Length: 379
Image (tube, rainbow, N blue to C red; front, side, top):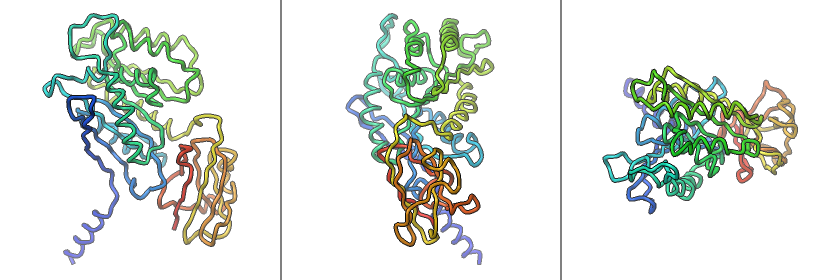
């Protein structure tokens, strides 16, 4: 009896879907080293074949904790109950100083235009951007089910980089920049924020976070006062302009946390707010895109309705839009929808909803016009 119980337990574990972290090295011709990358795919990624996932790029993941804290908090404690969704998390590593004559600063910093710096450890940011845009991001989009929506998370110079990558290259839809160096090269990154076209931008979530850097309480790292002055100037500028409604901007100060401990505190606040932001979809534009949706299963019979987050989907009325009968066990519908679209299937009442086996346990989503044909399965 004990043997059979153990065997059943082992079989159950082996069949259970769990989150995975894959390790891959990119041998890019742009760099004299192989770059490690960590790729997290969430629970039920394999079975949820009609799910597409946002991608969050976490920099400085040569310190594994930077990667782990994002994927762990985001998929356990940060999201609200019953409002959770899965994300693909990509940890991008930079070399450590003892490996080769190339440091993380080379990845994140351009050649200074105003400061004279006698150091070889800067100036490769354009190569790093090229690697991101032409090698890493295409690889992720080609080999994983991505939604097309991206975010970048960085700390210190990594935070300066995500500001640069968003404002200058439009590499990320959203960013969380923790303790960015705004003063570098006569406020190079502060000027990027000042020059950014908030009004002309598509919907974004932008979080800028700072600890005690440059304050009298900064006894551990002893950042100069000009670091704090540049941060304060950036905040004053953002307070002086009108941030359009389609931009969600958070500027957070945590003076009780130093340059290291601010990372966790930032994620407990900014990452939580970002998860809430992504759970409530913001339409990416005013265009209506054609979509094709099917629902098939042995329990599909009679009238079946689709309802969701816009008028064309019934505005969450459980008796929203009746689907057409394709055959005895399949219902179909073709619609023109704004994206991202979110929806559920019912028998005309919230008391009878269809559970989707190959999709999300909550709302189903269509986020990209290139992935707007969905074939859902139910029991």
